Length: 328
Image 1: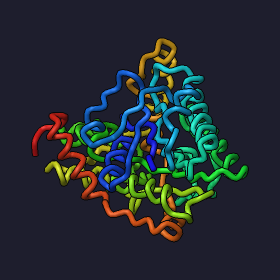
Image 2: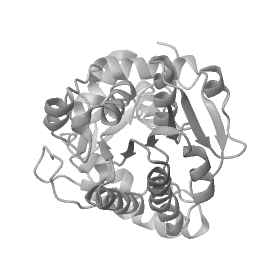
Image 3: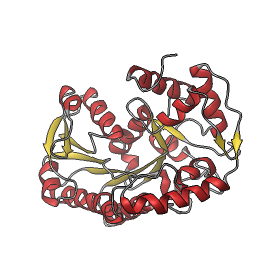
């Protein structure tokens, strides 16, 4: 039977949809009208136009589907009111769960975020670590996850994946970091000893598919992350080695950037402008995000293959191919 993927025009959802097609699965994608779908069509993905926030659209798209992978989400952008995050991230999942119940789908796989844990004071965090979301995106994702847990308690077949920081070919979130290191403009805020548990999109897709196929995944929550959690200093040094520049050595104090970030937020966000500096970006340098993936390893056989050296190198080479970074 057909597999439905929401968010298939995005980074992770697109990789998932194309990977499922390569595995021989019939795949349908729920996409917003007017979305760019060329790569999905070329991969043989069936396109169904509609809105995740429309119960009727989700009901129609999920008809005849055995599994629904709910990957769609509103991420952090300044142009959205808080309500929009809840409409999409929570209301969209509610629509998926309702449609799956109506059509008797075998399983819903909901993609949450490791961000629901916020700053991890006692790393590494396992699935039962306390919740402490830092912003409206993370708060909305936590509420959505609670709705998924409620569905599980009600007897619905659901699995939940909490990813680390997803990266890889096709994603631009790490472009600024890698490019500034290549251009010798990067300066570390703070000690650089905080850890960031990244997960290459290939490993993330493997984790999602395991959540959608393994019987052990039903009714469970799994953290999906890479083989190890490098420090920011290690990430910077790895990147510098790949692009052939000296390892960045300048470290700046944290508090001035927190103050400037607060001021920028107050000046920009009311006008829908993304602040050039905000406290969340400072948090990138100060918040520990190291996870324990032993549950996924043990129950699902999850075995991340892409280490930080390979993953960053592949991502940078894609940036270069696309013209985002200078050749090396």
